[in-house]
Each structure stands twice: as structure tokens, then as C-alpha cells.
Figure (cartoon, rainbow, N blue to C red):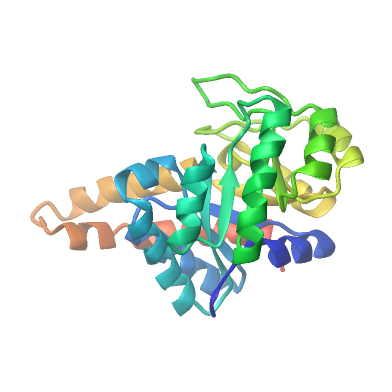
Length: 276
């Protein structure tokens, strides 16, 4: 199975009433565990390299690593550069194997966000690469506050940006360590009423399972991003591995021991939002 972009996967998810899971990658072990989980469930998966990952592992390295995994997989795999804050970052992703890009212009005036996103689309689409944008601002737990998506701005972005999907802010929060009941379904409905494109929710770890299912089945939310919940699983597994095997010092052996727990957590997420 070769790597794919988001476009057709999102279209199918929207038509058939399920969502895709974008799983945040930090290294080889979790990326491999995510692909194995997707193969177990029998569904597509999005491998996401965010700013933290790219600061640790340069784009030319992480891009090729994700493409290698995608090209060996038996299910569709999207290699997604998440939160590219400049067009240049995103263009580098195209050059090094990414099949999908998220340009984050959420802090910019909407006119500039639209202009930069549409310019990126003009380069990405001919290369077979999909583009996700963001309108409004998804904040961070114990950090910068969110700014809910303005439906008028979302409508303009939907019409003029050329993006394949729109990340929105309706109560979802990055780095949320506990599930909350923060999704504002009325705000989401107002955005759905004036847009046509698939919608994305970052901060999926803070969304309770019942809401994930409802959003995937009953709304145009077609993609959830999950990172914090998976990092928590990895951290617990790593601590347990070190406690259980105090004499092991080999890095590869230690990290390999975390993979079953991460794979199981990823599989549960995929089953919840896809249910194909």
C-alpha cells in the first residue's frame, strides 16, 4: 500500500459517517506502533509530525521515515506535516515525502491566512499533496487561551482558500490531560451551516469517547488529532518497563518494550472514531 493524501479519505469518511485519526508521532517506535494498530483494526491512519517532532528529527529524516512505513503498510497511511507555521516549512515537507500538510495561519488576520493557504495549495495540489488549514485558534491546557472559530471567517476560508479540510476551535484544547465536556455543539453547527469542507478537531485527547463517536457520526468532523493521550500511555509504559527490567540498559530494547501498550491505545482510538 502506497502513501496517500487526505483528500479521498476525507471524502469517504464524510460520506460514510466516520472520522480519521491523526496520531502524533515523536519517533520510530510510536510511528510503527500506530501503523500496526491500523493494520490490526483495518482502517487508514494519519501519521503526524508536529513542531516538537520536527525540532528533534529534521524534516528530511522524519519525512522519509514516515514514507517508508506508509509504503510497507497494508492500509492507507497519510504522512502529515502538522502545524507548519510558515509556507517554507510546508514546502520542505513536500520535498521530503509528506503527502499532506497543515498550514497553521490561525494567528494571522483571516485575509492573510486565506492568501497564504491558497498559495500553498497551488503548489501542493499539483504535487498530489493535500492541505489542511485552521480558522480560529485552538488553545493549550494551562497555556494560551482558545479563540472560537468565527463562522463568517470559516465561510470565507471554505470558499477561497482551496484547502482540503478546516481545523476549527469549538471548545477543543491542545495538551488536555483529562477528558472534558467542552465541545460547543451549537458553535459547531453554526460553522457547518456556512461551510462545505471536512472539519478537523485538534486536541482530541480531551474529547470524551461518547462525544468522539457523536462527532464522527453526526457532524462533518472527519478528522481528530490525538497526541497527549498517547504520550501518557508511552510514559506509563516506559516507567513500568524501567521498573520491571532495572538491569536493561539498551535503548532499543527499552523503547521496544513500550510498543504493545502504545499499539493497544492507538487501536482503541481508531476503533472509536472509524468503526468502518
